[in-house]
Image (cartoon, rainbow, N blue to C red; front, side, top):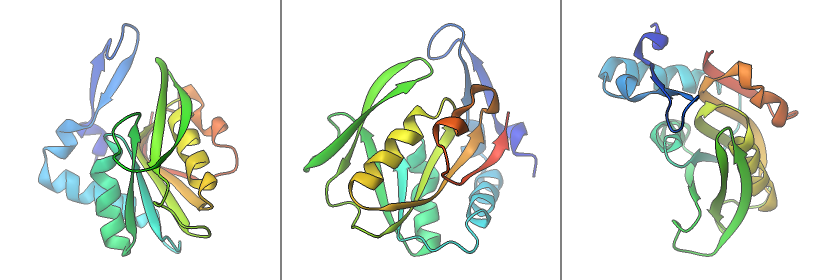
Length: 170
């Protein structure tokens, strides 16, 4: 399936000069949504995964689906102030600003194998912060996967040696 046909460019969002990759047309199409989930799942072949970490907010779409298919737990990573229990936090740079991510302190146990999932890999700041959170709790990041990778922003460089997979590359 041509997944790119379901990705809409929105100019000057969230600020002037940024072209936002809108995945809602893909989410609105049942067959594309299902096939995208299957394609993301196929990128995990041979990996042992205990937890799938999904990043606020669009990482929450596919990460729980992947966790369910893997028989793994789902861990939400949220923006500051959104989680109700004890948290750890990590600040990070976006391509258009700065923010803080948080994770519950009991979300990952030492030694657990973790898949980090988000919708887009842009500058790598968000994914790098999530990997740091996972490692603070003693987890091992076995792969970072994304629906979309914006290669021209060089986000993979910020992720160093973590294995990276993406369904679409721009």
